[in-house]
Length: 89
Image (cartoon, rainbow, N blue to C red):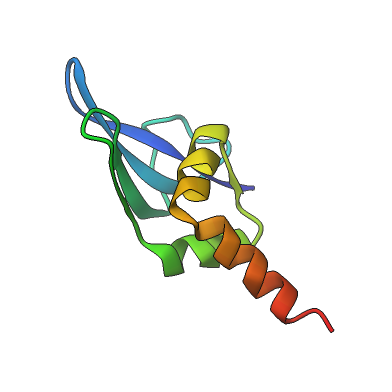
């Protein structure tokens, strides 16, 4: 199973996070399948690769709670739900 979760980067006391698609069995700093975004909690900046995120969500990837909140604030989940309902007849 694939999850969308945060991977810690940066210096001591100055953490920044990458949002990655990663296998559930991998550790936090393990090898990721793909980098799909970036989050800096200190500057409150977010960069998201929306097509890649939507691709993984459509394939069944589960976001963690924190990543879910980031995606919800960015409006990505509305796009995902809109795409899901568009194809259901």
